[in-house]
Image 1 (cartoon, rainbow, N blue to C red):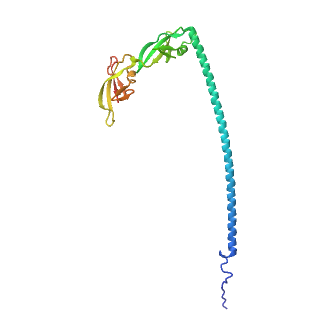
Image 2 (cartoon, rainbow, N blue to C red):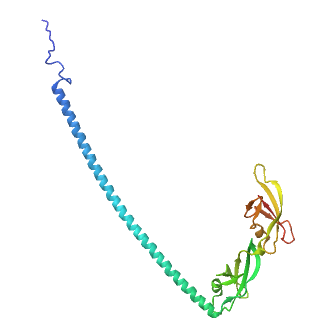
Length: 253
């Protein structure tokens, strides 16, 4: 027997989108997914809000700690400034008391005497400190005693020394000494300083050296060459071996 069958319209496309039940299942699946997405978004929003609240609380705590630190720092600065003012007033009172004591004892320097030049325009002066009682710290008194040199009051010596004889000597470095201002003379153009250097070398004699170390004077003496000012030479050499250092040679680059 031969049996033949056909799919009727009722059964056709039962698992396709056009089937109402399939569409309903898909719609329910979408709604479930949307509900899950909404739940996830709500959870994220809650976590974000919690994170923002934590961050805000941490910022608030940090701001409070910063304000507390600033307050403590300002308090320490004010306290330190007050301590420095108190210490400064105390030292001024001590200095005034010591100055009054020195004046009462008539501790003073003898007339300062000029010594050798130390550098361009600078001469050293020295003087003995007089009327020092046996119980008195001479070096300390020396460091606090003023003197007048060339009409200028020097508040304290540059340094003090105690000699082997027991004398206390103060030393000063006095600026703008005319006798300590040598000058360069007889400039000689010695040509290029070196291949590709783009500089020229000049040599000159250093005149007007009456006292002091010739090298210190030479290395601190300025010069002007072709309108260009030099604070000091590059090198110095004494070519007057065995003679006085009134003539020294300098190379200016």
